[in-house]
Image (cartoon, rainbow, N blue to C red; front, side, top):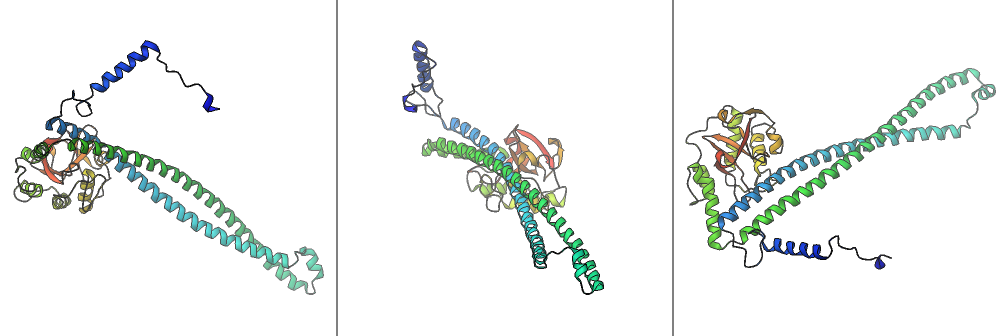
Length: 361
């Protein structure tokens, strides 16, 4: 029947439809420099590409932290589901054993003929012996009643556990759906950034890389893009030992310092790669302090401090959405995992919009 239905009519007819089509074509012809088509769109400059790539990386980092949060919740839901499933299995095993005991008793009763106790007393050749057995039977009945009550309790517990497990499973599926959504968002942003960078010529890409390196090192008064980023970062550490307010803060900084040069990988918590909150979490874990997984939960993991109060070991946060974090090392500098293509490094905290700081440990 669907094949004979009339096609839906456009809500725009005649001149209105032609006007809409004209506007759509005009919009396509005047697309941005990053998505334009035809010879009319100017080629984006390396500076424009850098600005757009920076924006995409920032948005990817926001999505990364949401992914990290969803993964943390999914992991907790899995752990709770596994505990409920294990407890349900143990309860079910006890329930089955209790049922087997009752079944054995029922079979024994059937074999004994189930005569009325008064009749068995009349027929007994030794009434005293019968009365003794009756007393034992009464005790057995008490035990039987207790066994029935135990079966009922176990049955209720198993039903409750299975209901809780089903609820946890639904919760888990919700978290996993959010996990997939945020993963797709991150991958989409990173793919868009790579596509933009691929449009640059070799010379333009070199200038772009130099600009990124200069932003990471020159702004801190450290060596520029000559030499390795790892060596430059180590050279830019404050001269002499870093004086941290606590032993744990010193341990966290020592761990972060040992990670310089390792790659940024979104969602990574080490040991071979990190994202920003994964690095700070791992650094403080090495000092014996457990931090939550995401930037927007780490900021509430300790005592808030002002920028003027910063001390080595403090967590420093950036952007209005609290989407980036680094480990402060003094002298206006931090160790952080910046973004894809930029390994763990030292950078000035002025490099990004400051959003707050927290002291832990």
